[in-house]
Length: 205
Image 1: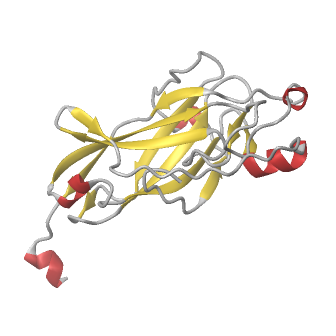
Image 2: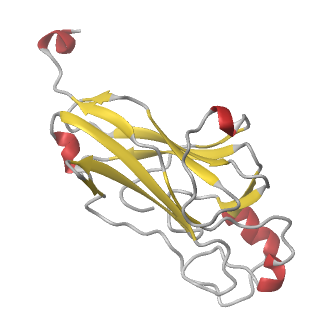
């Protein structure tokens, strides 16, 4: 797990991506295409309150693709970073946490490795999770004001070289997979939130 993001629930969204996403194009490669969407649980929070955000990864390309199951962590060859816009700059989390495992020197089992680390994302579908923005890692959330949030997701795809993660496979097994694993970097939409001190009336309620 990285940057204080806490995954709560993963979900699949079997509805048309074109009706749910904006024009958020993949910057890593032209095809297949994915889009990343952020949906904050609240648009107004109190100073110091943790913000919960839904993250959706949409397949808007023409083909089914393979993606990492853990889209909010480095384990599985993927990485998600959240940024808070402060003035004219984007600021990431103040702490950096990485969740990897010691590489297994033995040849990986195709079925077990795939089921544990990867999944198929059908075209016009999405896969997602919930993450937290903790004021400990984003101290700006302690100050009243209007802010915008953006995310960046990247994936290295499925590697054939053993590394500090559990997602590698033998090249001969990668070649047998029915779909290509997506790799590249994509930015999300911006979402706006307000950090607001509660009024006396709202506190009394």
